Image 1: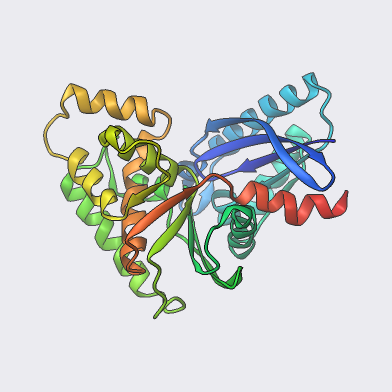
Image 2 (image 1 turned 45 degrees about the horizontal axis):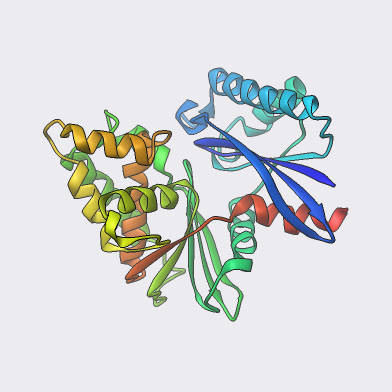
Length: 303
């Protein structure tokens, strides 16, 4: 059986296609588009331009699926459309124009799906898992292999970029402003007080980008999926400078992470502050996440 899952994120819209056999799902392929929906939210409302953007991408995904005669498709959306004041109207219009039903998942559900998507490849029974999206970040503390605490924070890489950064790569002053804002928000959250984690499990594009850029700066380290938490601030300090970047650095960035340069460093700022908040020493990138969790918790039980 073939099943498509479409994730309408605040920065990236992704479609993944899975083959399902005997209750197990294997991803066959995936497509992604940097749609930047969070940047279309004006005064809390999703603009018509944002609705058009989401509609265009979904139509492209739908046409691809129709061309392959794939009929089983489920889609969900996260912070950008979830938090918009006109969420219901915007989602209804996109559904009507694309013919694809969209489930608006809550922040609590998003954190839960993140955990259950990553759970199969977790190596420790206790730890902290973080997914930094374009419009929100999900944090899960798990113990004995199950969720102990979870939270969705209205703090995302694209939203941070839109508010504080004028160019593609932030200046040192913009980095300082972002760090101050992120740390103030984290300090106001008491649910995770007293929880420490030597290693953070990172999901999503920010952590994938962090691994890619770190490996490009440290090519002699070989194949790694874990980086030191201080590596985030090292990368920020290396690239977020007042002068024009040397050509070698520009080439390195464009090769390592070409699609999300504009949100990369705001994401690093969020990740660095969260790692500091939990006294983490290392960060391990996990390839699975919310789509796999949604598939296993919501789709497979209905088949």
